[in-house]
Structure formats: C-alpha cells, structure tokens
Image 1 (cartoon, rainbow, N blue to C red):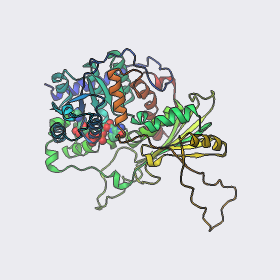
Image 2: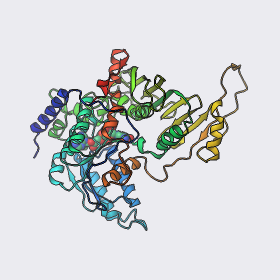
Image 3: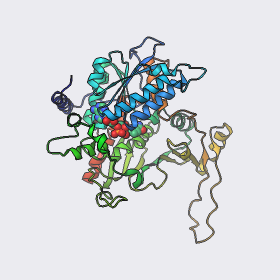
Image 4: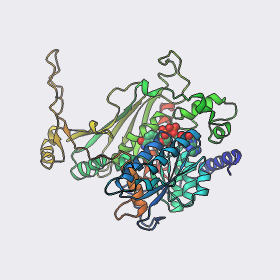
Length: 503
Ligand SMILES: NC(=O)c1ccc[n+]([C@@H]2O[C@H](COP(=O)([O-])OP(=O)(O)OC[C@H]3O[C@@H](n4cnc5c(N)ncnc54)[C@H](O)[C@@H]3O)[C@@H](O)[C@H]2O)c1
C-alpha cells in the first residue's frame, strides 16, 4: 500500500535521477514513422488487448469515448480492465459509465454483437501503484493525468512491462520527457505520445500525398498557426463543496497539490486549474501550442531558434462576469513566438522557413485553431476541424491544382466574395486567392480514435504498422516547445543545439 511519504520520496528521487541524466544519445533526424520492429506484443495474435487508463478527467473521458468507437467498429478486440483516478468522484463516475457499456447492448452491430464484452470486467483504482500491483493482466496503459504526473506514471507502467499511450505534452520538464524515452528503450515497450494529428487521415493525406508526393505547396518559406480561445472559455474552473470534500488532504498532498504553507482552498483551485501553475504544467503555450507546433516540426524538422513574447496581459487585472477578480495565474495568458528552420526534410540544405505561432486565451478571433503552410505554389490551411481545411493556389500552382481536381484530390470551393465597391484599394494588392476544398477523410470516427487505433494495431503487431508518434520522435518535436517560456522570460532568441535534442 502506498503511503504519502514513500510516494513523495519516489517522485523526488525520480526528479533527481532525471536531472542527473546527462546528454547521451543524439537521435537521427525524424522520419515519418519510427520502426518498432522487434517490439514484443504482450498478447498472442487475435487475443484482446487488456487496457487500463490513468486519469479520467476531461481528456481521459475523450480517450474512453474513442475506445468505445473502436469497440463498436469491432476490428481491434480489447478489454477495458481498469480505470484509475485519485479523485474518487471522477473515478466512481467513470467506473459507472463503463459498467453501463457492459450491460446496455448499445453500439451492437451486425459485425460486432458484443460491445459489452469489451467492458465486462472493469475495476477502479485510486493509485497507479495499486492498479499495476493488482492488474497483472494489463497490456497497455493510457495516461491522461495533469502533465506533472505523466513521467512518473508512464515510467511506472513501462517498468511494469506495459505499453503506454501518454498524452501530450510528454511531461512537465524536458528532463522528465528524456527519462520517459530512455525507459521505453530500456524496457523495449511501446510509448505513443498523444499528438493525435499525426494519425489523423486528413493530416496524413496532406503530409504524405499533397506535400511529399505532389509537392503542391512548392517551396515553403512560412507557416503560421494559432489557438485562440475567448474569455468565456478561459474561466477559472470551480468545484462545489461536496465534490471538494472527496479530495482528502492526503490525496492532494500525494499528488503534489497541497504543499507546505499552501491552504487547502488554494490546493483545490490548483487541482482543477493546474494548466495555469508552474508546478504542474507549462501553461497555454505548451498545453495548446503543442498541437500546432508539433505540426510545424513534423513538416519542417528541427528548428534552429525561437523568439517569443508574452505576458499575464489580461487575467491579472480583469474581473469575471460577476465582477470578481480572477484568481492569480502563474502562466502567460498570451504568447506569440517565431521558430526558424534551416534543415527542412526533403529540401536543399540552407533553405529557410519561419513559423509564427500565437496562443491567445483572451479572444476567439480567427476561428480557433489551425496551421497554415505558405509556399510559392500554394498555401494550405489545415485543422482538426475539417471545416477549417482549405487550399489556395498561387499563379504558379494553378496547373497542378487543375490536375489535383481532375484526380478528385481537391475540389474547387465557393468563389471568393466580390471586392468591396466603396473606398480606394491599392491596385498593387493581391486579389483574394481562390480556395479549394479537400474532402474530409475522418468518416464517422472520433478524432482521437485513429491515433489509439495506431497504438493498438502496433501492439498487435499488424504488418506494416508502426507508431505514428513514438516517444523518441515526440521528444524531438517537444524539446523546442519546452523552451518557449524561457524565451518569453528572457526576451532573448534561443538557439537550439544538438544537446536540446539529445535523449
Ligand atoms: N490530445 C489532446 O487533444 C488533449 C486534449 C486535452 C487534454 N489533453 C491532455 O490530457 C491530460 C489531462 O488533461 P484534462 O483536461 O483531462 O485534465 P483534467 O484536470 O480534466 O483531468 C485530469 C484527471 O487526472 C486525475 N489525476 C491527477 N493526478 C493523478 C494521478 N497522479 N493519478 C491518477 N489520476 C490523477 C485528476 O483527478 C483528474 O480527474 C493533460 O496532459 C492534457 O495536456 C490532451
């Protein structure tokens, strides 16, 4: 049985060991897929994969919903065996929901008449230690806790011989992320990081077919991306008194929220709003920015530098709609940054590209989140939200676009709106480009489903399948993201070196 002291000690030891770990192996530049040849599956072919999940808050629930989609499709047999959460309220609610899947025949199809069998034997646990001790039959563990628990949970599961799917960002610190990659190598177990766009068929079609095969953007010198979220979506999350009572002091202490000198009320607030606090997360630029910057790095490779600006611009002085000042937030609410790249895969050495990114938690302007890549043949705007996908040819790309339309790979979109008739426009201004659409390939699946399928298929050893975002490649992409806040704080350009990418 875990005690508060031994858990804190374990975490401290873990952090000390991570900090001591020097730079060792330097990874080769990333390829599209890592190979996982030789990774032993825990299961014999055809047997269901036994799954446990740690952290069943908002994202844990999304992963479970996606797993339900996989159960309904019936092509990758698994058994959900365990859910684990330190918060009894979240744990009980999740166990109840999974039990309901076991008894309702909901989701049954002609192909699969036994969705409920996927959920027939789910146990709930309050700690990962207890789960790993009692559920020796698990093959895979999903980790969807706040970021400061990613590394301890992932490492514990890998060492217990489980394959791990861990949410992004990989960890709270780059040292912790390194330790995760090393442990996956040492144990020979699979580690998939939850950058789910890398398995999204729309992104894969863009990357593999339009960009690589047809080079439809030409020479790309710029990208921009954003995640803008309005004030109503960036409110403090509160917890009712009865729910808060379920979080006993020992749970809050063990999980690192209640520390010496901190009030219980502050600990509860931080438990729900962990993204804004330095002990648990790196703030919006890492929490939201990780998604788009990962795609920049997928396309452009390792950046050579970053500059950034940001601050506690709004919530430090604003009041909410009841006139109450916001509780203090440690992390920047708005950040803008620019990455430079000069070693772009598939392009001649010395070609340079720049990518601008902003995370703004004070406005919903510009339609949420997306990435746009701008080349001399065309630009392409892509997002998880299929409505935000659009291609815009330049004059040099018109012929290729006609070909892509003839092949039904793109379709002409609605014509651009007529130019305004009033006012004097500069005759040198470029006309609004004509937009082309790309049919969404998501079908009826949840957007996280593809990435989880990729993980389960790799565990199963499906021929030709390997992880789309294994720990090593995720680390290459996340290493520069870990340093953006430092660039904001110092106001200096950060130049990356081999040591930043060394594991
Ligand atoms: N890939 C994506 O699109 C995506 C989207 C949202 C969140 N996320 C990631 O998912 C993770 C969770 O985010 P969230 O929004 O669900 O947070 P959340 O606060 O809603 O849920 C976190 C849950 O983890 C539990 N928890 C905390 N410490 C734990 C521990 N040591 N062991 C077990 N359970 C613990 C909490 O009680 C809570 O139920 C984060 O890393 C976040 O970055 C990914």
